[in-house]
Image (cartoon, rainbow, N blue to C red; front, side, top):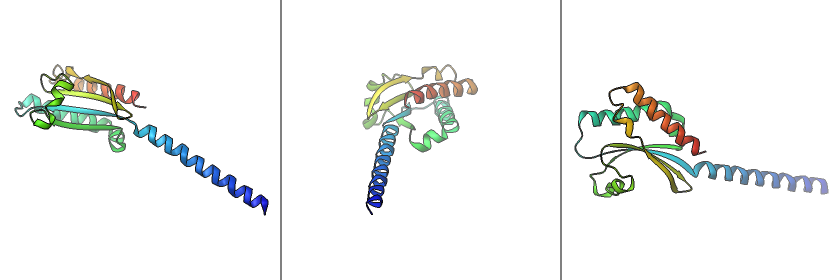
Length: 143
């Protein structure tokens, strides 16, 4: 009888501690993410639309798992809307831009403006590789 009781207690301790370990692992995983922001204003030329389209394609095609898990998020934001105007100062925006932001434990720790998207707008393959490389770099830091 005593053996069964001790075995049961040990089993309960193992299950509880496993749950705690899984819980900590889940918290750590959820505590960091990368957000890709494509910023634009009210006026958008054909190239501006192309920048958004290529950005979306680069991210949605190459990072399906990361998007589905929430490790990566893609947002399109109009900075001419009052509630979004703060992004202009936050990221020193001066034109349509693709920004990558790394957030750990709810705090942004790094960001970069992928400003060569304008240079590569005429070459879809280079554009997508450039964006993909930047996202891979940030996701590597989000682990």
